[in-house]
Length: 186
Image 1 (cartoon, rainbow, N blue to C red):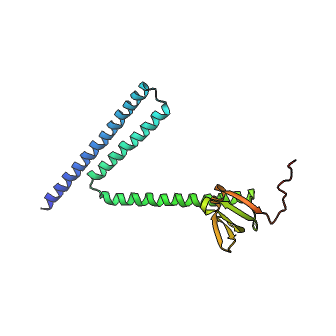
Image 2 (cartoon, rainbow, N blue to C red):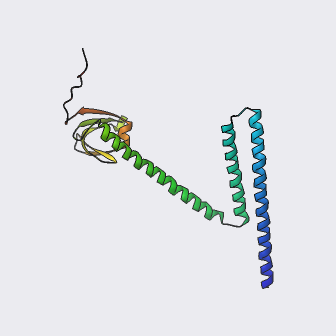
Image 3 (cartoon, one colour):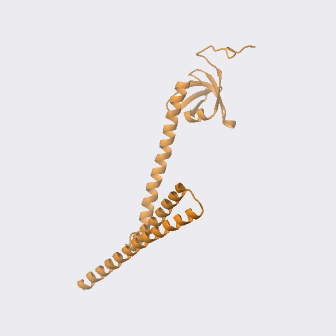
């Protein structure tokens, strides 16, 4: 009985091995044939080499992915578990990229606002944003936000990158007495 079980395992392993070799050879042949077809069509239609290479890479990636999926199925790996793992990893990577972009965007905007200084703390400004327009006194500027106190005494938190993307009107500059007509001749 134990011998029969061992034979079954060996036969299954041999079948999986042979199928794996067949899929790998098939994948190699598909990639080679696909590359020749792309080169032939590219020459006939005068497609630039950059586009041809990009098409070859994309199709090669697609064929390789197909072969890997076939191998996973041949070896009996639980596809659902792999799918959950891959989507979880991609989700975490996506969130990290979005969070990193937002974080870097606001920090970079803070440095630009600091050095360009379109307004300073205590200035009366208006940030033009359609129905979300904000008018008030600048209370504080941090690496991520500018805090504005509106006419009613509410504090409005505006991300730095939003301020760079919108028109800002500096109504009253408390720190400087700048004549807006200086340098203009009449």
